[in-house]
Image (cartoon, rainbow over all chains, first blue to last red; front, top):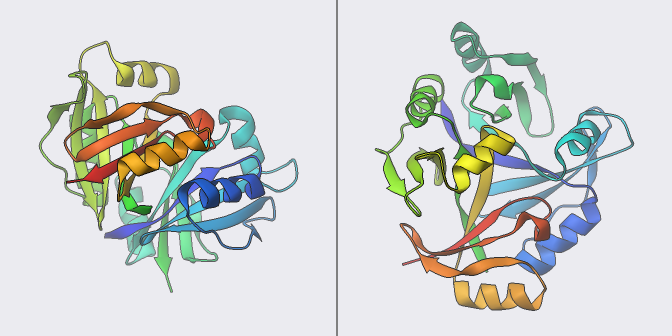
Length: 131
Length: 131
């Protein structure tokens, strides 16, 4: 059961420039950057109403975000839906033949997993069950 | 002043298949399709918490959505922020040198305008002032 959109991931080349853009142009404030995931991503969260925008900059030249930027350039990366019970969702998705990328893993927001865009009409989807 | 995210536009090849996907896989319901914009887009809205996902299918072989799908394939198309005063926003954006695409125009949700992704770190942005 999807409760709401938790955040939208947006790939950017330079996190400080992007934060300054959201601040000066949209008057949206962002959190201090942290190094996320497997250590190859620098992240800052922008609050818009009750949804977050996750600005994602590659940290170093390796990793998934560096590859994404090289291939697609700056822009939308993924949408994260908050769910009640991630294990039940994953079981149900797998039963429907949807491509789940690995197993749910604990992260900053809770336990999350990604679904390949091949199975979701072109959108990389993250599901998160919050603590 | 941005109040909240109003909707996310997602380009799909086949609206009925996409609606069925959101219904059966995510248990998210969508509105009956309407022909939108300049008559080249078929649209259905999916409600997720207090944000909408706007599923956008080309209607006919011409138009902006047909071109988008041809170039990029299915996936994220734009983000729409609700603002208080769209004329004030447009004046401020133009003063900041942000590329505003045309003038605000009345539409289904209110009066809206788009910002070119060149000026927004890679994301096509719509601003809407609701009635």
